[in-house]
Image (cartoon, rainbow, N blue to C red):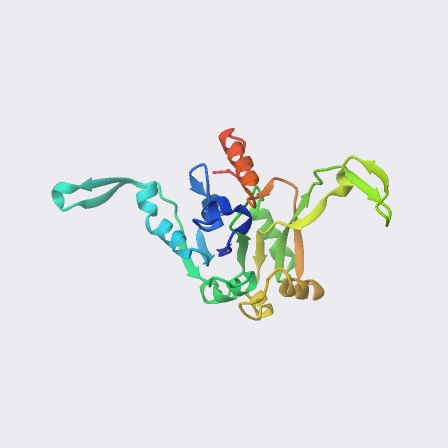
Length: 257
């Protein structure tokens, strides 16, 4: 079963680093966040990836082209014409296809463009900037059981601040601390899609999270897999620092390998 990763956006909210590389290639603990995501899937035995690249897509291609040099122990024999030999192989059992899906293509268009690479079987789809400790085996079991076209991972995002209640004129009527009822259910990525979902996408200008998902909802074809564990996107520098701190303390919930 293939894993499709959306990795083509500009990453405009974390420009400190995304001006030099795609956001999925920003590093956590010395490895791109996309590598962390791939390790999550690989932990469950899903090792074939299709990466929807766009902005600075060459950075992603160069990373995987040089993966052996970065991760394996190598011998460089300059007495034998500079012969290179991998002497210790701890490289992942991955097959990675990087597809240039266009610079300004929207999320739906990117998915549509990789149609020929996914075949006729259901596939995983996620974003290249968020990590999670979701049980992918249970999600897949849930998807197979309900028989609909799409499953999306839903996350309960807690309210961080106290809540004000006001009238129309702006007069504060009450203030209270946050509670469980203030949480918001959001799209956490980590989706499973039937290839038929691609028929819901028109062209490069289609935002997958708009018309296609709305149509699936209207037709009763979208199911929610509730995840109550850890989830964190890397939208800002603050998010990156938080994830780095979890890794440094050995408390990164998504790191199951």
